[in-house]
Image 1: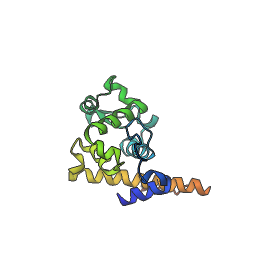
Image 2 (image 1 turned 135 degrees about the vertical axis):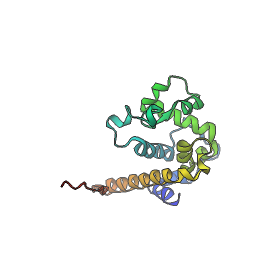
Image 3 (image 1 turned 180 degrees about the vertical axis):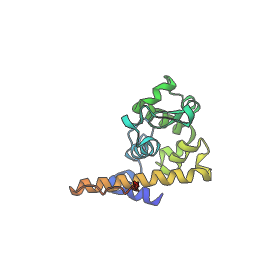
Image 4 (image 1 turned 90 degrees about the vertical axis):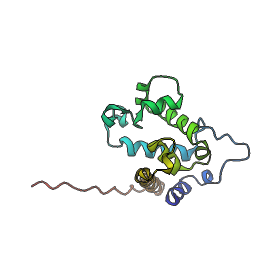
Length: 170
């Protein structure tokens, strides 16, 4: 959590100061920290998929779209539409925010990115499940990579390449 907070502080210092007295912290508000964690979650869920993950299907057909949303998650969000609409990035973001508003409104209001990511991955009590810690670490790593890319852009330099293992052909 500390590294993610540091990343956000460098990207948007005012974000961590908290909302002004009476400020609207509803999920409809474009909070930079919430938008960043949504971007990081999307990369973790479907970052390598063509078309931004729009056509991604996982969990043997139970999860769809860029955020790998299951039907029960979509129903719990209360967002009008069809489950298949979760393939659309903006619609899926609304679904995720509505789900968070229902199951972890305090974390949403406080931009507690770890709780938000873990609830997205593990359901309404996901933030208490040991099994979601690895998922959070992936999201946190992506947030750090986003920070490095933003800093590199600010410096006018290229972002450092992410090292990936190279397959050896024999």
